[in-house]
Length: 510
Image 1: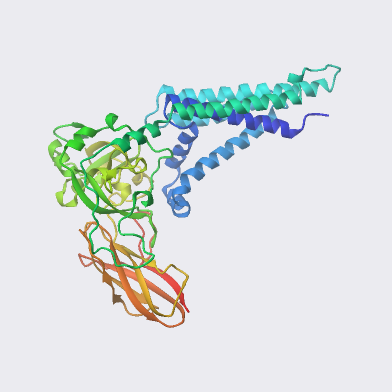
Image 2: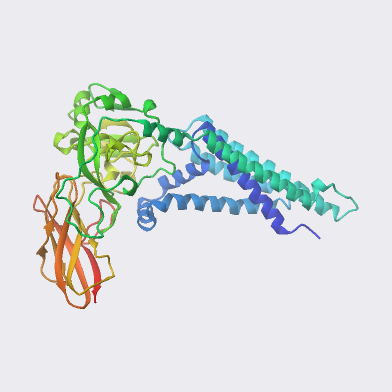
């Protein structure tokens, strides 16, 4: 009786896991990436159409990257099972499967902007481990199959029992190697420790007294750091020691500059309440947050550099290679308060939000302005650059559109008939909100009460009380900007420059 197919499949899975563990450990120690799987995921994110990325963000939120990594891992396990089954027939077929996986991973690794020859080592180590471990495990299965067709009696090491023993040994080694790699390469933990030890010359946020409209169930006017939305293309976020960080300002400037983290901290810091929102935010969505930011005005730095009069853009580059093109006039206008931020809500930037330094530009969507882990500012022209998102179909400039949403009551919720409190937020950064109106059951627009704001760069809370009879009702909202712009009701998708339309919810009064 031949060896069951499950044993061959199991050998493939164990070999696949062992290869991934060795590759992961080598990457953590040599390159500080967690695994070549991460590079594969990052490459997929770069090559797929922008509309698919926007759809993933819309449907999966911040889970899009973990789900992508899980999907890649699943495909690799399926291919490993296939390799194990093929080993039953000949030795070269599984080698081809593993070699093909290795070439795909190598291609992804070498396309990264900061790839070096050292990045090849984890991939090569993984492929060699796959082949060696599979050969080691299937040797016992092959010998036992042959012994059943002859009078030969194999040793215990070359039987199914030996296969089990080998599998246990490989499993223990796999776990140990993976853990060792994570332990030795725990750069993020070291950076987080350094971040927590920083004592920056910034003030703690003092929320203005009149900003809240006191509606139970509403999100707070100030967004806590751990609740602030996170949208980026990094599968594994960069972990950068502040003393090793620097930023280069160059291109169409009179004086090229390189600034260290200490240079920024010792400069005159500015602090301001600023609301940020993502271009992928759907009508009524939650990819928006308001925080107290501390940093150095970019207008001051660019004035020191001396920008060429023909320049109209700044190409920002992140430590992970992501780029965005920002209008130069938005960065050089002192009234815009664009900054290289070092703190968020009175604390050093969280790693996931760009530590040690990120860019904040009020009134522009993040895809053209909010460069986390920023390390390079090239003063240039829009007709000479193509940034990450603009290369995927998004518009070049990305000004924030006036918008509003209803936070209370929740869509579809039951409420008591009679007086119903309705509340929400409205925003039009760098312009400001002059008014908000709601329409109940398709009726006339009526003004609502607004909360206070410290400046025109933050969102504003609003509140209304309406009398409703029993039954189903709907309410919609629109905002009016300080420049007189009335929020449009025409629905538009997030591509190419942000969604539009009135947010509308329904509720049942009982």
